Length: 131
Image (cartoon, rainbow, N blue to C red):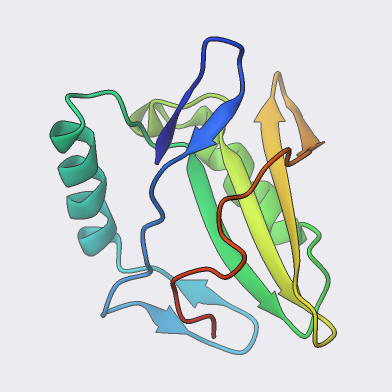
C-alpha cells in the first residue's frame, strides 16, 4: 500500500502479510484473500483514501528474484482487473538464493513488464518473517 508522489516516485508505506489462512507450499503460495482485503480497506480508509493498493510482494527462497511465468501472469491479471483499481501494479520479489537476500521490483505498464529501481529503502531488515 502507498501512493505515487508528485514526481511520480512510488512510495510504499505499508506491507500486508499473507494472513493466518494463507497456504504456503515449496513452490507456491495462496494468500488469505479475506484477511488481505480487510487490511487494504483499513489502510485505505484510515489514510483518508490517500494510500492505495500498489501491488504484491512475496519471496522466492532458494531461487532468484526474477519473475516466474506464474508471477508474470498474476501481474498482468492484476493490471487488467478493474477490482484492483491499479493498471500499473508492482510485484516485489525477495530472493534467498544465497545467504544474502536480493530484492527486485517489477511494474506492469502499457502491456509490458519493467524492472524498477529502488532509490532508497528505510528498512535494512523487514519487520516480517520470511518463509
